[in-house]
Length: 61
Image (cartoon, rainbow, N blue to C red; front, side, top):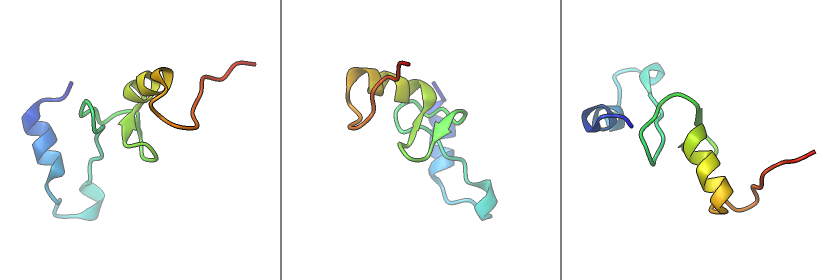
């Protein structure tokens, strides 16, 4: 989990658009972020397995 100071710093508007750091809404992680859901891959997987994200289910083939 990211430190509070880093999460707060990422919420500020950057000087340049290319410096935007998108973070997970639940844990603050910056790597493995999915824009469609505003979650990192770990939080996405947990939420999908619990059925909290509509239309998403575990694949099997």
